Amino acid sequence: MGSMMLGCEVPYLVTRTHAEGQDWYRRMLRRNREYRGGRGTVAWIMRDAMGRPSGALLVKLAAPEAMLVYWVSPEARGQGLAKAAVEGILPWLAEQGVRLVRADIQDDNHASRRVLESNGFTERTDSLAHPGVRRFGREL
Image (cartoon, rainbow, N blue to C red; front, side):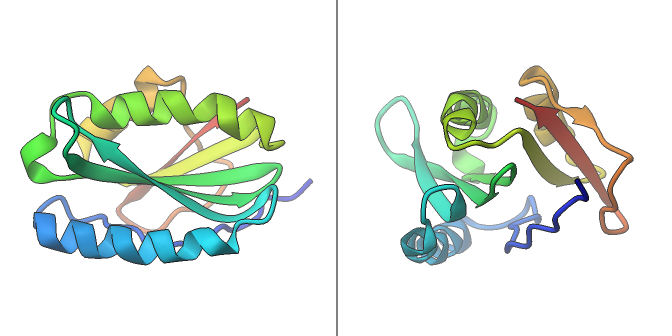
């Protein structure tokens, strides 16, 4: 089966402010209404140890594939929130019929690379990413 392109807005810039991240997250939440059993966009909020909103995880579903996008507030980076969010979403994705999960990251985003690799993702060369972007994937 050929690869599907799953497009979504990605907050790539590490220098984004908390307000910009919250605005991006609100737009992604509005897209939750598009989700229809195995297809569409679903977003979750990440909370820090104090329960404060600290990031977001977005999944663009087109089973049997999914594209992950996540953003963590600058104040909450380094606490393991993205790692835990990605780890936590993988079983749910499998239940939705997803067999291949992809994530694109900027070349210089070493923290995001660690998040993906710690969750079993490997760099993919079988599909195209944009210049300056690396594509990772994991089969479920």
